[in-house]
Image 1 (cartoon, rainbow over the protein chains, first blue to last red):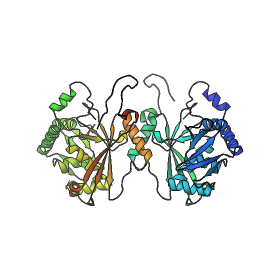
Image 2: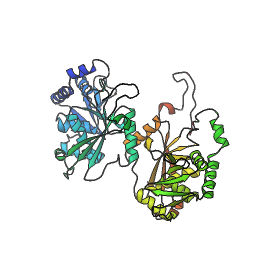
Image 3: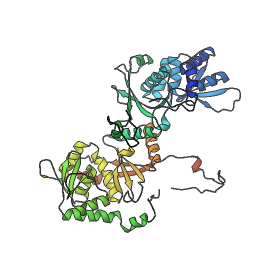
Image 4: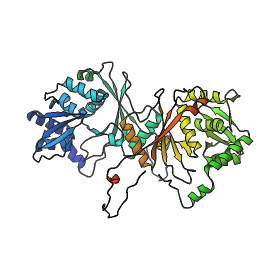
Length: 245
Length: 249
């Protein structure tokens, strides 16, 4: 499915300014400013200046939060976003409620305690981010994530992503029954997205520490409706008389 | 939620010809003709004449199937529809693949073997049918059933129904996680239906025979989005200047 760009020039603009470069700039900037995030329930809050705010917006990490402060801006990062910056990009450190910097292992344990499926969810998030997809929450579309090939301002999201797991504990909550498959495919269709299931196999590595992640394998499957009418081989002379291959 | 009739005069038409009466006519007619259904995998096939075909269509049981036969018509009944006619309305008998009539217990066991959640699904189906709702498959809307106030030709369906269970084995496949709740509510909204969950509690009666059903209890819950903007108490002077009252459900 080809990306649907939002207006003329968006594709060129995106090609001139690839997401990989923007993320890289964000990474450097966060390291240089030694930014610290504050752990708050299921989010991480970061205080940033105008330059970092701009990079966070352009790379689509976090959401700006309105505060009474005028000179500084605060961003709220989801669990997966925060852990990606800490563990994969190694450009952020997170301070716990006790005032101490959390190690990656401590952060991992904490986030797992808040969300039992975090290891699988994170594997999917990081898998897509590593491929330079912009990954955001998909909750309003009834899925886990939505994936864009560049900034949402420039392009419509192509994929509605559901995180599933194979083997180990069956923590899957979705697509266990046919009615859910129909529901999800239909909703995705109505918002012009393809349903993408990303199935994580932990290969019996467990989830004790983030180092387990590199042994997880990932399989991607799209689920779409097959329409017999549109899939006929011989398509000479359909209604409007055009020959289609 | 008020029923949305598909045109002027249709509500009057429905009132003049209540579903309870149509179903009752179907029941009498099936008994009179000693109709026999044929068990075929997960369906029951019935051969009917024009009068019965008309009653089946008007009461919304089964789907007509096209065959090579010209004088007789065949209808395909879903499991719940067939069992309702056999067990609740006692107007149909079903013949198994071995050629003999299945008792209700045998039919129950057979359907359970095809569909593990059949007891719960059937309880929901019969619960709604007893209240004279027209109940059809909801699969194309991503739910278990859709419920209409009368025939679908006259009225739009109001409820998208999910059959859930409480207690016993947790065979629930839906609404286990928030993303599914959002997905379902959003889809229901886009097709102008209210999500209705019907939660069946077997009260530890098990599911060994259809006689267990009468001890199951049923709880109905609608799930809708709560919109803070539309639910404000003081609604004087919104954008278009109209005063709106608070709607209480």
